[in-house]
Amino acid sequence: MRFGFYLPNSGPNAQPGPLSAIARKGDELGFYCMVAGDHILVPREVNSPYPYTADGRFHGGNAAEFMEQLTLLTYLAGITSNIRLVPSVMIVPYRNPLLAAKILATLDVLSQGRLTLGVGVGWMEEEFEALDAPPFSERGAVTNEYLLAYKELWTSDNPTFEGKYCRFSDLHFLPKPVQKPHPPIWVGGQSRAAMRRAARLGDGWHPVGAIPAAPLEPEELEGNIALLHRYAEDWGRDPSELEISMKAPLYDVGSGVPGAARRRFAGEPGQILQDIRTYEEAGVGCIIFDVRGDDLGNSLERLEWFAEEVMAHAGP
Image 1 (cartoon, rainbow, N blue to C red):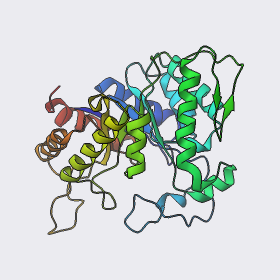
Image 2 (image 1 turned 45 degrees about the vertical axis):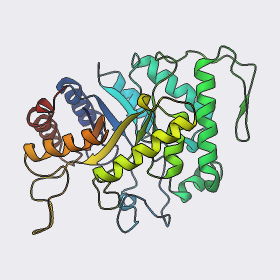
Image 3 (image 1 turned 45 degrees about the horizontal axis):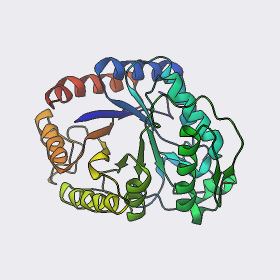
């Protein structure tokens, strides 16, 4: 099992000093990856249902402060050495595909091959409209086409592409990414369409679990992975080549409802380790925990605590 953590891209710790301290600490402690979310802007009124809260409300909209995801990860690439850099997830339709492919290739080169690209189709229709992105209703088809365009740009000496939303020919595209044939692509989302996308175009599936809106208990996850593997076989791919990387909260002790059952990934280190092993047996190879907070000292302590009390005992 490998482990990652969320980076703050808003709030008091979304500043050069705290971000540098958190990234360096994670690198030093041996975490596999660190992830950053993606909002370019937040409209003042958001009515689109948010898929990761029980009430469907986007509670981050009040602050509406978000650093640009790929710029943030490129900055942190220069001050770390081993930890992988994961846009999680990058909303594919938000960015011109040639420009996005260039930024991502540059990030892979500057980090010496440490980019893993997490991708999603997006959920906030108002942000699509503000960015003059392709139609929200067509975001799945747009994402599929842009991913194919990225791969063409990253792997072909004479990139040529003719699609509904993107077309190009007769151009140079250099530098290519360091990783061959291209950086790994983790496809986010819990829908059947997302799993089909992962099976066809991805190197892994990247769901969210252990939250009220998306519990993703191990039994459900096993069923989803079996379906993912059938989709991969339909596309003539080897299912064993698809990695399962899950995002989840890391709950503080006592954070649950009194008298209620213990939440997954809450409690003492031994309890968290048992949850990790349960998900590992279900097929998960990487878990990325949300350890963000407004206090830098507390964030660094949580990383150290997890590395020493949990990660060190989770096995290779």
